[in-house]
Length: 497
Ligand SMILES: Cc1ncc(COP(=O)(O)O)c(C=O)c1O
Image (cartoon, rainbow, N blue to C red; front, side, top):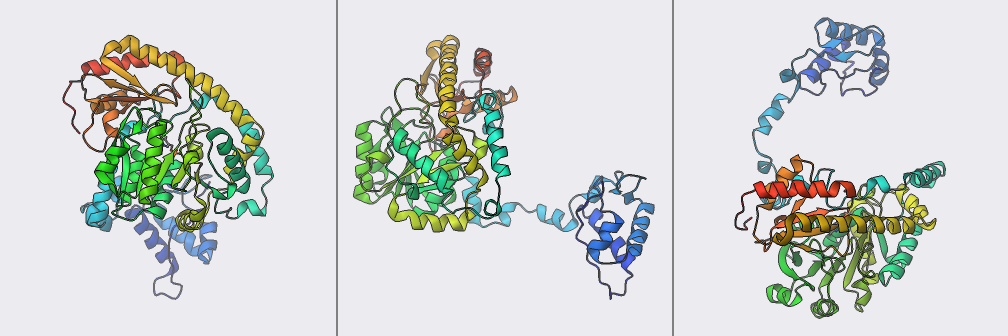
């Protein structure tokens, strides 16, 4: 079939050059500049003439000339294409672009932006699908039949309203469902009007940063902590203050010592990322008191608290806050799947207007369709059922992983954070070069995250964050043995980043 995409070709009907020549020249130039590539389909002469508003004759004449000179290939019964034989070096980058690409992007973007983007930590170990990928769920266990039935039903029900922009805060049905769920399961104090549906925790953090922080504002970041969250504040030009974490969670006294006047703290109280500790009641009170006394904000990232294996879920920090200092952030990435890009914020009532205007400037409104599907999924009881099933499955995978690590690594390692969630941390008593191991592990389809990459400053421990959500029980022992082999081959060296 011919392409129905018409290349940008301008024709001057009153110009001195005949129309067929203008068409010929434009196509030739588009091919030479690489805007049209070898093998690419060309619109039929009929469609092209209609789009250009000219008669078909000059188009036929120009096409014939381009075929004759080898720019186009045309075969009977098939679409005309840009000649496959055309040498690539003539059809890629246009001369002007070649010249520009000699300059680095940093010469075209401000020095400040270049420096900020340079600090972001995109890393190869977060990319692959395979054993130990952090944040990956048991995709093969997702109730796809139910899901596709709900998707089909919602598609059939689409009406004029479904095609237009949705509500800026998110669909009221989902916000009511989320509010009910958070009050019951997470002891969050909230009403549906405080819930804003967003594109995952990442957007929740990004919107919050825009509302509450100025460039140069200080924010406490857990050390080690969630780097993707920290990246938002780096990009916003904030001053990131690493605050160490111990078994009781973020060390508030140390935070106060390092920067008492910080504007905010990004924390994971239910299941510290990555080390897995639960913030103690004493620390929670201390953190809330600091925030209240200094007018600071607490961003509570409650990303996986549905999965606890040794105890009941821990109530949220937001539920203990009497002064509206906590912004609560939740996500469907772990309990459903990450490509949904659905999460939510619980906003203190007096800030709703600020959040609403800020979100509107960023993306107008969240997409409606999957909000409705998720609402149905929850309302019909599939969500609860799915979480219950996954809890059992992840518990089994976690036990197997702990056993395999103990068997292979024995006393050489410590395991943290296995009581909850979908990942654990294995750290080495003698430091190793975890980044180079992680890089080589990726080549064997093991997607461990090096622990040192979770530190802003000098790492205290080396090791790996291992996700077990998507790793089948039968694959775990082999994967751990492979990891052991890679660690053995790696030179041990002092911790440094
Ligand atoms: C600490 C933490 N927060 C949030 C998320 C989820 O982010 P999102 O909701 O943007 O997918 C993850 C995913 O791994 C995480 O580890």
